[in-house]
Image (cartoon, rainbow, N blue to C red; front, top):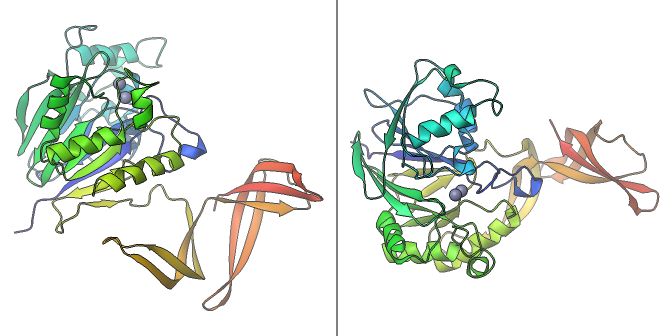
Length: 389
Ligand SMILES: [Zn+2]
Ligand SMILES: [Zn+2]
């Protein structure tokens, strides 16, 4: 008998508002949306931020169980957690059926999430109204403390500390447990305890890490978010195995998230920074949880053969140095010094040569001029290109 496997995919990891600036590209700019496929084939979607559109465009209906279903949990009604709904293509397909779960907001009353759907698609905010959404939708109200079963999986909801309320969800599958706790601020004793209960012994604990510990104590106090350090404390206290830093601040560049992750890894053994396209497998053999980037977000790739020396740190924490050959290179762009002045937003053919293991390698690429800087070097122009194929 093979061990049960669950697959957790990150479709949106950014907090507050989507970002499209290049400096945030690597971790990704879509707002919260996660997908968990349980061993019985049940598909869970956590939050409906802009990442939901991406999930919808690569839609694969749940499979595995006899009557596979999709269950969608919405933690709260802030824009970044609902704005993907009208753009989720599977909602416009008649045979699809979705089960939505969220809490009754005191600002909206009964059928809060249903009202959110209607409000989002009301004129003049959206070109078509609700009647275009032909998939079956069932809405269920849940609140902190609720616990229920879906297929082989147990779901628990807990209140978190966030303006206008927010729910955290714990999903226990036969392959492992995922605790999803975005949008929470530490400091309320009861809700801090809720968070620890949610994370207790979880294989994957996804926690809000929007702010730095310094911001959390000063300028961002009361904003309803947390830091990597608080996540580490809760993970330790609750005995969670892997911590995932989530809900990155829209002003956090990739480099800043790198630094946040580095600091967290100094304090806790198994930490990842949530990244768009990242997939975590639960229940796979081995002591450590496996996380992958299946490559959908990597840039244009080219086969190459460049001699290289690589220095790094092993899984076990030892420094290593090794000579190898780079066989495949991902290429986003380059800054090229030219005597000619190319037109901005025009195409350039760039052929590069480099000595490799089998003599000189030539690489031909098409670039698109995105930047021109005439003031750098006398007689030369600095030309920024993005490689397109
Ligand atoms: Zn949020
Ligand atoms: Zn929020």
